[in-house]
Length: 317
Image (tube, rainbow, N blue to C red; front, side, top):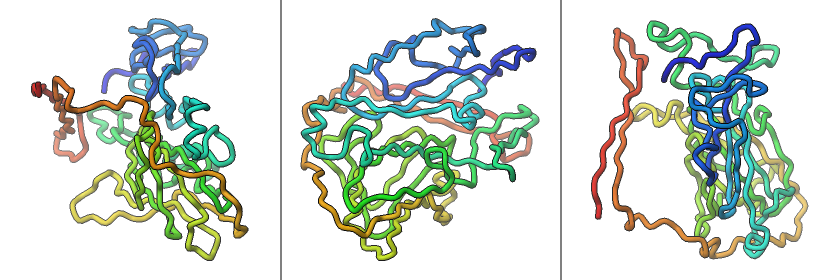
C-alpha cells in the first residue's frame, strides 16, 4: 500500500497503466504501479518512461493477460473492466499437436471474476475501507457474490459433442476457484499460464489462483449426463484457504448446453506436447529465495492494517 496517485480533480482524469502477465519484453514496458499515465498521456507518474509500450511477442506459444496496475487504484480500475487476454501462437508447431487452436469455435478464452451489482445492474463496491482509522477507502481484498465469465453473469455456452479447448483465466481480485465439471467430465491440461506443458495432465478438479491461467481440453462427447447440461462449478473457500474444517459452498460458474447429436471429432490430445522448448531445471538454480508475506492488525480490530514482506536467500550451489 502507498499514497494514492495524484491526478487533476478538475478534469477527473484517472491514472492507469498496462501491466502484462507472461510477456517477454523490456522493463520499460512492464507496466509497474508507479508508471501510470492519464488520458492523452497529459500527466505521467513519477517513474514513467514512455507512453509507448512494446510487446515483441517473440516467445513460445502460450497465454497472456494484461490489466491496470496503477498505485492505489488497481482494485477499482480492474473492477471497471480494465483487463484483457490474448495468446501468442505458432501455427505450424501447434497444428501438429492436433488439439483445437487458432481461437475459433472450439478454442475459447474464459475470463473468470466475481462482482457485486446494484439493483439497476451498475457495479457495486463498498467505498468504506476495512480499517478506516488507517485509510478511509483501502480494502485488501474484494469478493463479489456473482461469478462473471467474459463479462456475463452465470452464462451458458452451447457446445457440440466433441473436444473444446478453454484457456481459463482467474481475473478476480482475491477469489480462488476450485473448478470441476458435472456429468463425469474431466480436464486435460495442455498448458499453464504462458507455456505449454511437456505432456498432458488429466484432473477431475484443479485450483486456480488470481492471475493464473489454466489451458485445458474438455471432451463433451464423454459426458454421462442425460439432461444435456454440464455445469462448471467451484467450491473454493473465500477467502482461501479459509479456516480449518470450514466447508466451502459450491458456486455455479457457467453452464454448457451439450448437443445430443453425435459428430465426428478430428481433434486429438497427443501423448507429448511442446517438448522442443527448453524447460527450467530447478537443480540449476544458484540461489533459493524464500519470501513470506504477513498481514498485521492493531487497534483492537481483526482487520489488517498493513502487509509486511520478509525474505532471504539460501545458497543451493
